[in-house]
Image (cartoon, rainbow, N blue to C red):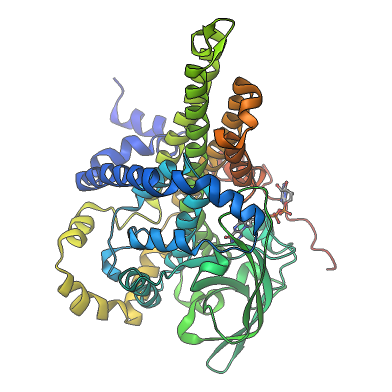
Length: 507
Ligand SMILES: Cc1cc2nc3c(=O)[nH]c(=O)nc-3n(C[C@H](O)[C@H](O)[C@H](O)COP(=O)(O)OP(=O)(O)OC[C@H]3O[C@@H](n4cnc5c(N)ncnc54)[C@H](O)[C@@H]3O)c2cc1C
């Protein structure tokens, strides 16, 4: 066909082969055990959906409307009982160690019935991802083991991510924008640790979480170079909760205000301090923050796509059932060609959402947060290593500074720029494909169903209220389009200006 040399030069052109076919490349590298595991996870999700999520979804949504301050502990305890808060955490840390790729299909299944309940589980992994992206193995070992213990004792231990501030939402999700944003959450170094002052808003699961991964800045004039991730525990002195937001959708998943008033965080609970870390990193300071954020959002945006795809499928299923049961002009609606076209379009939207999150997760498997965990030798070693070896030999090693240093060397210093751009670009693509698919399918279902689509018991209006929020969080869809441009398109046009930072107000 083509010579080896030609092949190399043709595939290295723009877009490079690796940008397009993560699924093709991951195939032979993906452990077969993880495929079987994923099938089991989907089956389990269907069981949980049928027994717990679907029967409660409408009632819980109504209850939250009537009592916005209600906290859905009963659902959280149920999910904890089923083992969903430690299921996707590595065995290395005393947890179940199911492969992370299977989390997205799990969330998709639950979202066909209730996106809010899916998020009560899913957003815990946003906190998990943030701690993981600091590669602080000692703290991961401590906090993830607490999550596993919480499942044994029946006391849920959830983790939240607190990055959004009252006047900085989009800006804090993008290193190129954060310096012009109005961030105010400041961390001051004091003897033995840090004190944090400021507030956070819209923190999902805030009131329900035991641990909060709080993003603060030691220098508010250059936050992109002075980011700190601190683990703050509920009940810590100087830390308090404010109100829950009254939202149009995903009502069951609280979005909380958090306040920090001279909140002291001992050194042992500072997951990473960018300024201090940089001495051991080969990368410039901004790059380290960029890598950290990209590790997190590249997995969480795939999760948002799974939520959207699930809601898209949920709306499609309601419309399909309605079309099968309803007669229009003497014939079942499902036999009208226009209705078949609408249903085909809805099927396509849900299916493309699923393909998008799968591809984003394959990118994470090749280049991102799942790389080591799904590397075949490591995967099988972890799967079959006896628990006592993990607890007595591996765990003490993870608590050494050396272990964290090695993890950071591997994950920060040796990750290439085009690798994290690829994971980040695909995650952004997945995020807006999935969330737009969810909203679009709800609209199509309503068009097909007429007034029936507006009734609560048909669930489509709830899907629409829930899905709309997906277009906003994890960076608005506009931001994600810009990020896709930056990561996957701008490389072809070095003259293009991406994320023009502009002047910081008041400078
Ligand atoms: C239900 C819910 C749950 C959430 N959960 C969490 C959580 O768990 N943890 C957490 O930390 N945060 C959370 N958030 C916050 C969320 O991440 C932010 O709302 C989101 O990043 C958008 O920020 P913003 O709302 O401040 O919008 P803004 O940043 O104010 O954006 C307003 C508009 O301006 C546009 N815009 C902004 N900057 C640019 C730019 N540079 N170029 C082009 N357009 C731009 C946006 O696209 C948007 O249209 C949650 C939000 C919601 C709604």
